[in-house]
Image 1: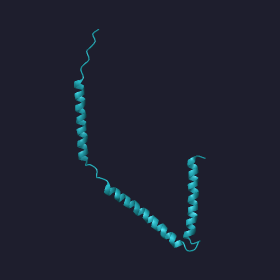
Image 2: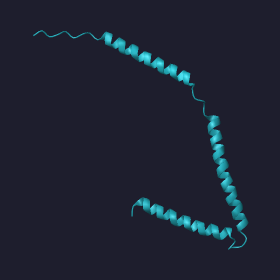
Image 3: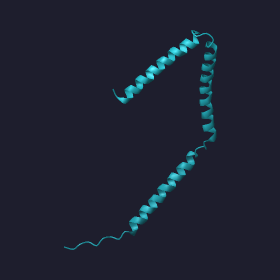
Length: 102
């Protein structure tokens, strides 16, 4: 069996045990814990959802806005014209090679 398959089997067994334990606690097979387990489950679910929402809000609030498209286009055009000028000046600076007479 490959390592990934072993890890998958372990995860499967742990989750099945978790389902059985959770079901036992929720359906009050062991008296006195069902309300507490339901409250904890609801709290953890809401905590997760609102936590993700808070993280998204924090990311949006602290990320600087992108540059406007017009500014990016101007930068690209400036770079292209600069490259064209460099290419033109480099071709002008090359001296022609003398031709060989046979």
